[in-house]
Image (cartoon, rainbow over all chains, first blue to last red; front, side):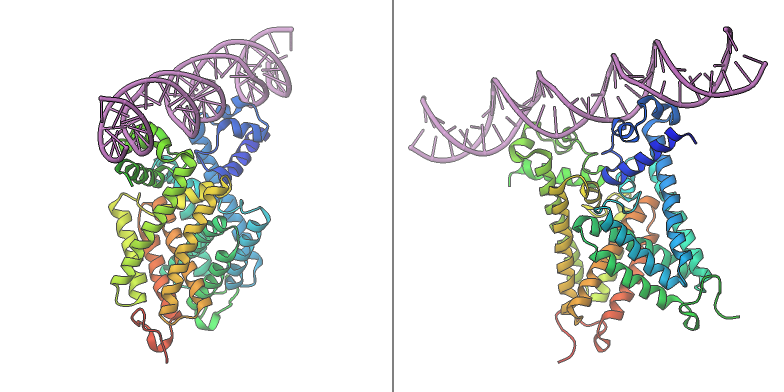
Length: 203
Length: 203
DNA sequence: CCGCTACTAGATAGATCAATCTAGTAAGTA
DNA sequence: TACTTACTAGATTGATCTATCTAGTAGCGG
């Protein structure tokens, strides 16, 4: 991937977080990326929609990798969940409440107005759910329960981002983190609460 | 309030849910409201921002009233919480995944770009939190715990709306509702689980 | 050097944006 | 009837939007 294309993608992701999809102009993007206007349509012949699609999927992957890295660095899933929420709150504070979910704003904007991009956001959320579910099944939680738990954690994180950005404080993410860890603890097999990842209960 | 002003407010609220703040044009609003363009600036001299502010606050109040009515109709808070999530999922299905939170899309759009409207959304979320907190303290839960619980319920609802609108199914709201009722049940004083509203535990 | 591809550069088009403006109508009071 | 206020009606303005267009440059294999 050329430098210019990457800069356009990075800038677009950053501007989407701040101003959303309709609120971000192509002129604004090339100005921020210090790229020529023509390059947008060279690299993304489908225009704003194609650029948006790639930004959504790329941002989704990058955010998932960050979350996975936090889980990998934690001694057990409970600590991992706690660290994800604490880290999210910390980043939010440090970035003046800008750097939250990279796709939530766009997801709500396009949900009822752009079927292509709606599907892109749905795919990202589903990939997140699947990866978190896998982490919980590895920790000994049953498949069905693990998926519900994964969904609820994403909901708490997204809801926390929404409330924290509106209020400009981190109270909501702190409450979410406390309840999230409690939920995971309650779902883990009793004798393995705090089990390391990849060391399933029993047998 | 004149008929025309009310029609403009109603139409704007509906269009904001679908297309967001930046995605909704004033021309589009008057066309949907069947109102003359000049009326917008007659009733809302501050332009789009003043209209947005009133729509956010009005929608926030109306949604709170709906939720409160559901709680009032339920025999206890646990049933109330369950009904709120089940009702949200049902409405979402019936409206082709359009009618979710009336202000979430706008809240994310303006959080980092319009301080006036960010404050409007923050006020709405705080009013919701306060009212739900009161309901839980009335059911015998301590003030601090009740507030955290209220925040978490809103997060689950908002996160559920986000995931359901993206996926175009109600799985996420169902998972949220199940965990939400479980959380409330766990927080209620043991001997009053299922207590009617206004009948606090003990003494 | 030639010719090809990839990319840069930005002017331009045509639509749409929020906002302002003038002019007109309707209803109520003197 | 005359006057006032509230509201309707939509043309207009200037900015900005996405998208297209032509033209120029850089690097590379022959």
